[in-house]
Structure formats: C-alpha cells, structure tokens
Image 1 (cartoon, helix red, strand yellow):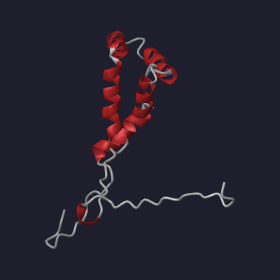
Image 2: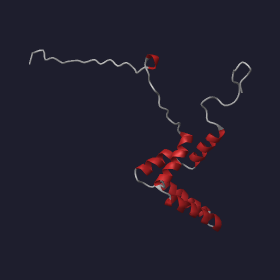
Image 3: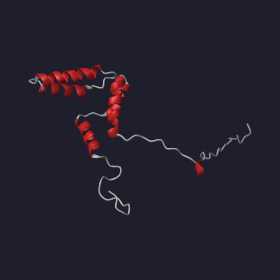
Image 4: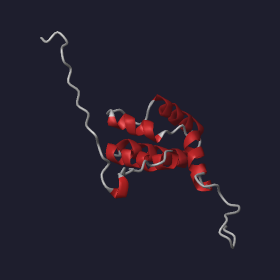
Length: 132
C-alpha cells in the first residue's frame, strides 16, 4: 500500500511470485511435472507419459485398489489424457509453463530520436604484398 507521499510499504516485493503462483509451482514440483519437458516430448513425437509418470500411475492404482469408484474415476482420467490430442496436451503444458517460466518480451532497439540504429559498414580489402 502506498503512503500519502507515494512510497510503497508492505506487501509483496516487486518481481516475486504471488501466493497462488507459488502454490502452482509447488504442486507441479511435487508431481514432478515439468511443462517444458512435456512440450519437448510432444514436439519429438514421444508420449508425455514417460517411465516416471507410469511409475506414479502404478502407485496410484495400487493405492486405490480397494476404492472401486475412485479407481474407475482415475482410469477414466488416465484414458482421457491418453486419448487427448498432442495439440491439447501441448496447450495444457503451455498454460502450466507460464506459472514457472516468465514470458519473454520483445525489446525494440532504436537509435537517437526513435530512429533506426545507425550502422557503420567497414570494408577491408586484403592485398597480397607480393602483388600477385
């Protein structure tokens, strides 16, 4: 909150993540979900469900063994994920990546007065000292 003089006091430090962003980052870390890795796998034509993810799937199945309804729901989610198009998977990873990695902004470089940057071309000619 700013004071009467305009000085900021308290609150979040500029550039630091807010609480919800920190929660998303922590959740993705616990899930061992790296959106960039997921997008790279899709780009290379590989399944986003790698061996590590499959180990987690097996653990979840084992944990839900006695819970028929929850196990059926989990299998439905897993089937939906596998059937989803690579485009949809890439879109989901792209959305998640925004919480972890900042978007890059284009920076326009201009010369004095907003004009194009002056470029000086230096041309050198190599001359054979023997005159050949």
